[in-house]
View 1 (cartoon, helix red, strand yellow):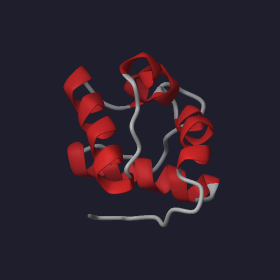
View 2: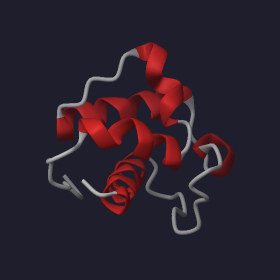
View 3: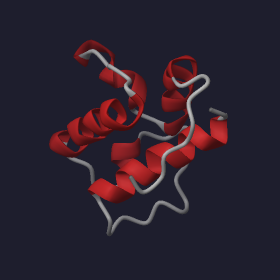
View 4: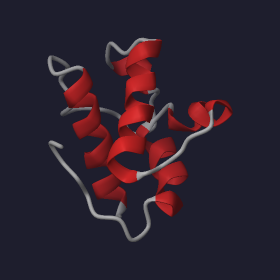
Length: 89
């Protein structure tokens, strides 16, 4: 997946979990929790959805890597290489 596809995948997952959040102006380098209303259960739902959609296992000690969209791209890029974007699943 490309950088843009990973960002789109994360935004789609967030939209599924928090449909009322405006994701159009997210800053990729700012913590997601500082920009939108996400609690710890929402974040866990994001991790679980990544596993369900893409087969990506994320150990709890590595959750911090997903704090920003840039962090998601850096962390997930190698894990999602060769996978197709799944939106609205």
